[in-house]
Length: 186
Ligand code: AMP
View 1 (spheres, rainbow, N blue to C red):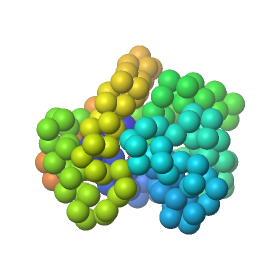
View 2 (view 1 turned 180 degrees about the vertical axis):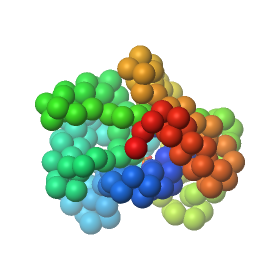
View 3 (view 1 turned 135 degrees about the vertical axis):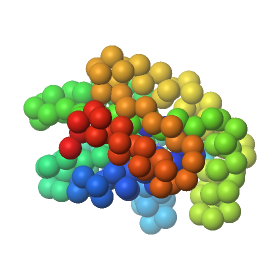
View 4 (view 1 turned 90 degrees about the vertical axis):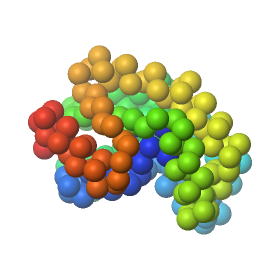
């Protein structure tokens, strides 16, 4: 978990590689559907470009479908999910039904001023439709209002791993690996 621009996607790939598990990014799934012009893509494009969240119903259905695929049988990493309390409960129920659970929830922490700069830089490189200044501001608000409070849920479960997300990609990666080792995640 982490605010927009905290480096979630980049670090998710590094973690997935380290543990030999798939990284599942709901944002990537939505973007791929938008690009391919699928019905789902058409449903979610305007919402994403406004910086709002896609409905829980749609997002949870996508995650359930993805987690049911064979490559998730021995573990997976979720990037950008859950983002609402409904999604947290959905995931808890889903994992309970599978007699499994989360080993850790990584929270990447970056000071908000640095985030806007990072996102505006990314806009130049990737050209994402939701990296405009207004949308970035809205995404920050939505994250702070709806997603940041979820960290308490995982803190109470004793699985929250907070990582300072400032510095180079490599520095953050090493910090995150060390924190997970301390938590005995393997
Ligand atoms: P991301 O690539 O994780 O920054 O996600 C990009 C956008 O996709 C978000 O700003 C949301 O509009 C949408 N999105 C991704 N994951 C979720 C989620 N778990 N719940 C609702 N909307 C999501």
